[in-house]
Length: 360
Image 1 (cartoon, rainbow, N blue to C red):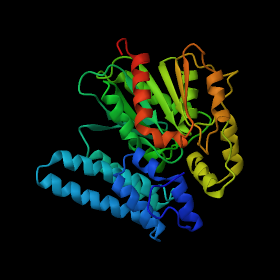
Image 2 (image 1 turned 30 degrees about the vertical axis):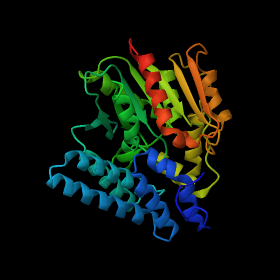
Image 3 (image 1 turned 120 degrees about the vertical axis):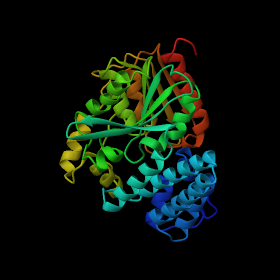
Image 4 (image 1 turned 135 degrees about the vertical axis):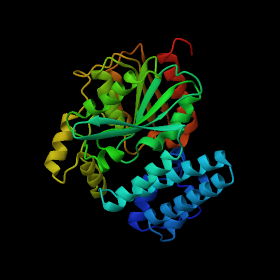
């Protein structure tokens, strides 16, 4: 993957090179970073500044910009700066694979920056087990025609997908950006992790949509990266799901070979016991002979995705009705199609509109 920064051709230390591969320029901008900040982050970390420090400095600059704009009455500029700061802080916390104090502090700052976008972005909280599931609700200008619930995977969650919500609200759809079990504040502050019953946690967001009188119409779900596995399971298990998008997910999850990836998955499950992590992953295998998706399915795949091959995603298609399922492949697409973000979001926004509303 190309990073887009001027120093991309230089040889980098192994940790920095891994961070640049996991968080290339296309991913940074896809999840809402200012393009200038994204280039600065890659350049500064390539020059030796730690990832978390470089990203936090950029966030601090955007927060100062937001403050100055607010005091001058420039609310549109202030909102833009808060969004750029929230995105920078989302990526800052990704420097930590495990749930350290530093990761929690950075994610708390990300949440505060996102909360400053109210009332355009509304914080929601759902009691679940002994904790709270969090999320962000984005509403269109008029009454919602339907609602789409969106969640991420192992490292990017919730407000990381504000640009997706923009595409949906522009089409008259409400969008709920979920932080499910193993994700965001639900995990970092409330100890809710991925287990064999993770689908029950994500179903609570469907409950919330049904209970909110502002949110009429049908409900769609979209899972990005590893979260696509959870979306497929929920669509197979819950008849309230009217349409589902799976983007870059493995149908058969396995414990990664590389240490940092193993640490990340262990954090999602909430244990250092590799046997327990394997047990959970085995329980989450999506078997098309056992799990049938009866609602319309849109499967997205990037031909250059190093994390989810087509063969890894194909079982989701076999679980769906061929008359109501659609496969879209970008031959040069990166993981979750970072490098085709605008076209991807237009496609999914239109597809959800066609399948969840009576008038497209």
